[in-house]
Length: 248
Image (tube, rainbow, N blue to C red; front, side, top):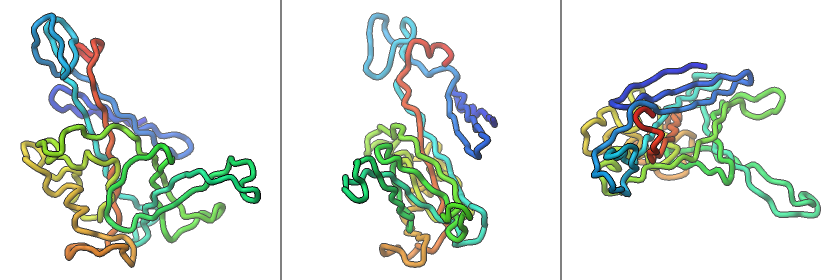
């Protein structure tokens, strides 16, 4: 296991990377520290938070993270990287191909242009990071790595709020953008004290980059053929409880 801790104001964010013997990586995200509170008259309650101690109100809030994944599966050659959304769907009963009705099918959609998507546990939606030009000698399928985006709750702030303007990345679980050397931040490089996002994934998507030879839709004048970068967004909705006080 590899662990690191990030201290931001009153919070300690813990990221654990658990490496297993099958080549899997499980990312566990935790939060501790001292919960942010305000005073409240004793005997009162609030719909904006929970009383954690007499006269102490801990406010409801969210923590939303973004992970940037720049896949290079068995190659750094431009054009080898492919990203595929893979889903599992039921199929109708059929006397010849599905006589007992317990069959299902796997549907694959290659990401051809910059776009966003969301987690979908109903269909076991997975993201496949593949090498488009190398095959596994046993299965005959493209070599790759996959992850299943966690369907955590996304940003609850109103669309017209400052929070939503500063962090539109927090409105979707997945973003697929064209690679640029300097683009490392989902909400742009200068988020603190900003009024709106500049240079984040929404701006990256708006360029209209594409990842295959023939884009499925018209692109903007700034669009170009690029290597895909995947951004995975997940988070915690923290409705405090008494047990969170004073140290979570």
